[in-house]
Image 1 (tube, rainbow, N blue to C red):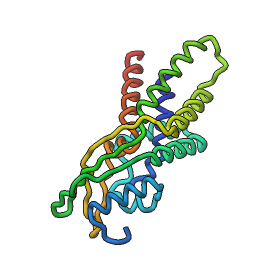
Image 2: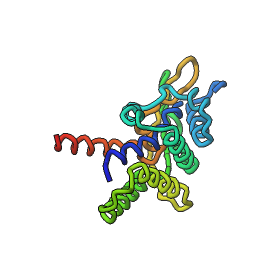
Image 3: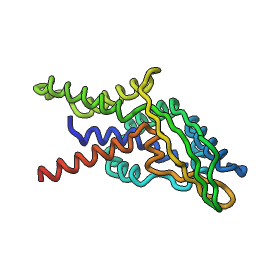
Amino acid sequence: MRKVSIISITCVLLVGVIFLAGCQTQLSPKDTVTTYFKAIKSLNIATMESLSVNGTSSDLESLIKRSSSSMTSSDIQSGENIYKAIFNKVDTKIEGDPTVKDNSASVKVKITAPDAKKILQDIMSEEISKAFANALNSSAGSQDTESEIMNEFQNKISQPDVSLTTTEMNLQLVKQKDKWKVKTTDNLIDAMTGNMISYAKDLSSLASSSSSANS
């Protein structure tokens, strides 16, 4: 199976996150993070936007720009359904007390999410095996294959015994107009989506290396 198809699929899964970056009352850094994570789990877009400094992370934005031109409304809807399934299973925990200095704060958090990277790797291996087995069958189009992968990914994410991955990190906040806001970073989005950012970056690098080698 072509690496570019996997990259495209991964970016479809991530495209909804661009809308999720980040209340009306003044919250402490700890309460801001708690409210932010609750908004993600409930897909409260307005609250997430109000609690975020920046709308999206740099790597996510770059990946989406490279694939957005080929995305259909159906692709985007499929991606939204999948990240809803992911965030529904995300568990977050604040560890210890925040560190606050002037208009900056740091909050240590533990994020547990479905291991999307492992699931995608398993699906990719399965598809490669299928491709070898059906090498002589030219009737199977890439669109059908991509649709099958999306459906399979959503099915695996929705399983009660889905593989999980846990990330510990220091979430950074800044105070703007007397309100604490979360800094959206690549590491945060990666942790919340089960390492899909890092997986997409790895695939993108492999595709670029293959392209350079063949040119």
